[in-house]
Image 1 (spheres, rainbow over the protein chains, first blue to last red):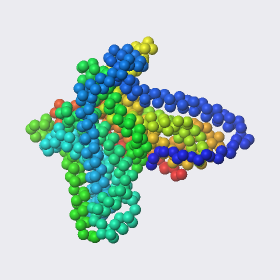
Image 2 (tube, helix red, strand yellow):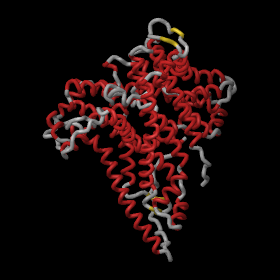
Image 3 (cartoon, each protein chain N blue to C red):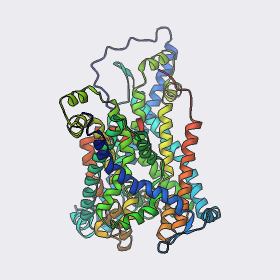
Length: 304
Length: 301
């Protein structure tokens, strides 16, 4: 379900259709012109609304405080790179960034491994309790996470996992399973059975069949869900705020929110802009490279 | 090779189910019990029946939060879907038919890529971004411009009657691109013959939109409404980071999630869970109602 438009070969021009109805068509033509002019205006306006704040943040990250207060559109007098290095080290953006990357790398890998295993078994094997397990997972989609926070906090604490990245990773995986299992079960069901049967005849074990035959076949679905999970877990705010209190272990979302509060006390606005730019820039790079896959992956859930 | 079937099934399901039961199912189940107790975290929870829910009925903060959800539930989907549909139509259909498919206006691809980008940014980071955009003096983006043009600065997040709208605007800012792409996928699957037939009958762009695109896209719009509605029941990250005093000024932007978290921090654990139960039933009611109300005859094409 990509949204790419196929490149079209030079088209045969449409035969004129206004034979005998010139008046109506001219009116329609005028309407088209007005409509598309207004349309362009709206498109350009929204482009400015989307890009404006981000561009302004990047500019401001090189300014000093006086420049930030003087005018929103003046350029910085010089490229003050020290704002960036101050944010990276003194404000710990670097640390938060590394924490986020580590946590999301492990949790997405874990989600995909455990999610695909469960989904595969649920989609391809009939056994007593299959439906029950499936609905147990899917039911998780109906509950707001906020309902769980009080008991979850104590469960994580009693397991000795409070304030650890391990705990955060495990909880991320657990809360990503409902959607992952739901999506991948449907996906495994669509895969042809003949290849698997051939593998069985060749004496392939169930486990090998999964890892060496089925998983490679499920790659498109896996990629979509992986992207969905990476972006979801990267943006997670409630769980880290709930489960991590040691500043050195903060993830990026939590860290930037903290820096924003501190910037208020220290009036270090340029540092805040630099920290913000640092957290936005990687997303622009990643988006530039994987733009099509990301759009497909994020919307896949809604289309299903 | 029937042998090894059950060990395999159990082996593959053990880890995911354990993790899921421990961290997801168990907390959800316990939350319903805790909502019936008085619990501060140290001594064991004490059963008090429905007292927390009685307290909730008299709690101003709760009703404020619910009314904010009500406002967001209507405005967030309405505004987001309207803007996204309008742009999706421009980018997919408004350019007229060319070589077998309906085309968007010139530069469609560029706009789609740009508009989608905010979806990638984490909400807390967007919230910090807009904290700077909304800042009430000349260092804020909007007020910087306004003051240069000679206007008085506007306290977007400070004025109680403006703060919630400023927050909704941020959510719209983030969401439009996602729904634009979602609607584009739906529009791409509408055969162009239908448009051509309508055009030959003299239908203009506006008629095309309301008489062809909108009805054929109804299912997708319904999905969008449910998604945005669920987002309107959350809004925690934005409210917590962006608003003054986490839900202020004076509770004018608070949401249930924020109240749950506040009570959790103050160790009002039973009451926090009761608010969670209320949120659960509100979300569920909304989802059921939406599906019921918006159900229409599917149009085959």
